[in-house]
Image 1 (cartoon, helix red, strand yellow):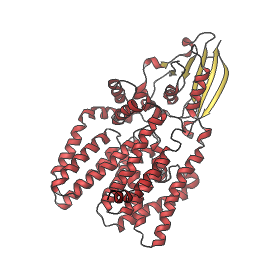
Image 2 (tube, rainbow, N blue to C red):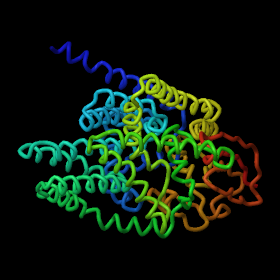
Image 3 (cartoon, helix red, strand yellow):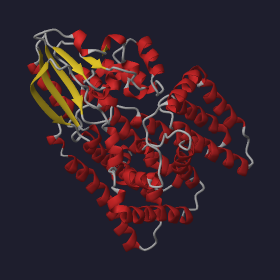
Image 4 (cartoon, helix red, strand yellow):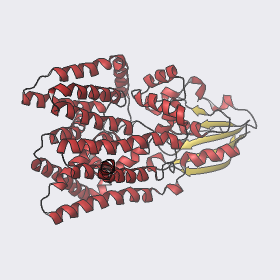
Length: 490
């Protein structure tokens, strides 16, 4: 019997194995970048100060709290920091299988959905981020499974599933603010389902009351952070191409140049939205609308809120990508003609696999060592009596993570820094506002700058003579090059 059960789960285990290989492949090849360095440095403070600094930022605390515990056990190496996200990314695959099988009562839909998530380049990309995306996505998917079970289970056992739903949603809303769109989608489906079936709203209302009550301790901080975002944020305004480009990215894991490939993008979006529409028409299970709402509501919510302050960003749709892939799986498996169905299945799988490896190839990560090599160079060349100054906060934290020189780096800032540049981690002791008063004759100064993030290169005093300069390209174009310049003060 046990052997039979193991054999029954071999396909899922194989999918999880493929997912693990793809997520561990090149896990530490790309250097740590600004957002990840923020995570790595934040969790080193004592618990109270960590929470105080989170309050000054624009994200809720749960991810950092759990990562801090992980770091205490496994250390803060780059492998360990990213492995945390890999683990939850693999749990997403399992949760998608569980959800799809429960909602659609189909092993094929469940396995194919899990396979697409395992192969999806967009999912893999955020499994490689020491950020809250994989954790939050898992919590959204598993909470969706719980709420579906709560709605469709007999009355005498449904309270257990509502309790599990609460236990999954509370950490989710404390992980990322975009999760509220997903919780709204779950609520809309549950409300309409209960109203349509003429069931009792009691457990639904109690559950959402408990969830809302649990958020009261953080509500004041949320409103403060919301005000901060509305006053100043870096996300560019939406255009008519924002959503189509996101569709392309969550499918292939890469961006598309709309000025060159506009027609390809239009055809791509029509094809995949057509597939989703076909699946919704053909499938008779009411649970499909739960999956659809979890796919659609975050797009609509982000677009509406962006009319005032732009909050629309591709990476935040990692939270809907699992539901998008489930909808694609439903549509393909509903195609009645066997040859066409199998051909499209094979084509989608090949597209996913090609995208994953092609994205690594075009990234040419072996030629773009970023701060990992830049810091290694400074760790070898800088002496204890030298000074290290950094011209941008977007490389200041990354250098602090890799820094082994024993020299405390100082961030040059002549004016005010925007909150999104990581000010929550900065103290007055970290800042230098005037180069001339801080240096003297014969000082050796190392200056770290970046050409990325829209940064400018600070002007140095005339009595600084450049002795040498090294450049290290970072992974993505927007990150630019890290420039390290050695000066002697005359």
